[in-house]
Amino acid sequence: MFNQTSVIEPLLEDKDNKGRTALHRASESGNLSQVIALLEQGAKINTEDNDWKTPLHLAAQSGEKAVVRYLLKMGADVHGADSDHQQALHLAAQRGHEEVIFCLLLGGANINARDASGRTALHNAAENGHEQVLKVLVKEGADMNITDEDENTAWNLAFKGGLRTAQELLLSPEQKRKLGAEMYQIIKAKDLTSLRQMLDGRLDPNFRTVSGTTPLHVVASVSGASGRRDNIDIKFSEMAKLLLDRGADVNAKTHQGMTPLHKAVVAKDYATMEVLLEGGADVNAKGIGGATPIQFARDGDARKLLQAAPAQGGQRGLPVRQQGGRSEVSYL
Image (cartoon, rainbow, N blue to C red; front, side, top):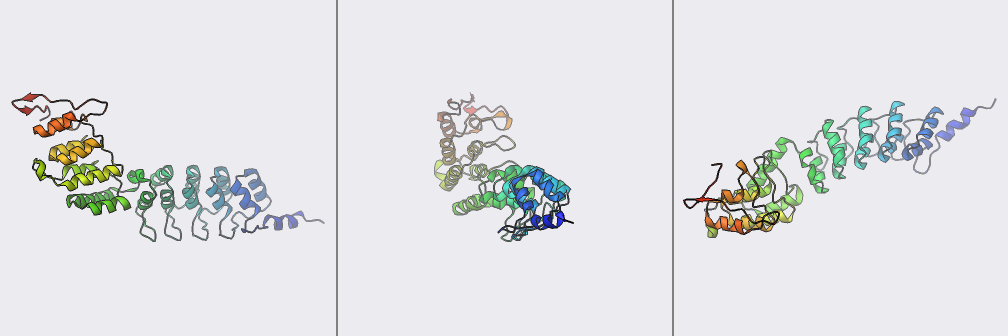
């Protein structure tokens, strides 16, 4: 009697030059009906191609959520690793397939599994700039402190790839504290070269410490000048220029509402004030107690400088009322 199964089984496992079967190809292309038919006919669900990739790897890599869900339902190995020791979760993260990642995690994927380079799915998402995937992985418990064989955390890779907005997601409070302390010491030491190196390698110009302070706030506040123009160290204003050139937000506010201009006024750093004003600093920005930078000014030169500068919206700095030759600051 003719045995149809004996003919079908070899065909199911026929492989192309990449070592891929019909199930590999159907999974990669998202052809769910064909995937179902092939499995019903006896196709091996965890069959590997030349790179040890299974149909689940290819479906995850291609973002085929329905196929991924069905393969998992039918017993696909969610922990299977290819020749680079990458699991399906690594490949989905690399391509930015957020919904596939949810499916894989529900299917039992190890969120912190490492590939041959020591990288996790979080590393892959960070390196390729997939911010939404980063949010999912962090929310689901991905370890942000894991380093690869080159000592890169996910944050390092995100930074190098230009995804500097991932700072809030990928730096723990302790990492922020250490980075902020290093930044502060470099700025305090007026080390322009080291600041430039940090900006090149791992410091976002809009990095925020746990108190909301940015590098530009630090530059504007640490000069400790006496208030005389001839006592101002020009290196602080050079640092401010560097940060602004790298994209620092000139009107960023601390958690207390203070801008870099507020800080420069308090420090009586005229050179940095001028740099900030040239960079678009808002002279009417409200800080502690609703006070503007002008209301922080304690000498005539600073007030003249601020009042002469055009504010955001085209207005010049608003003058303060005078009592007995001193500015009236309502919050003091």
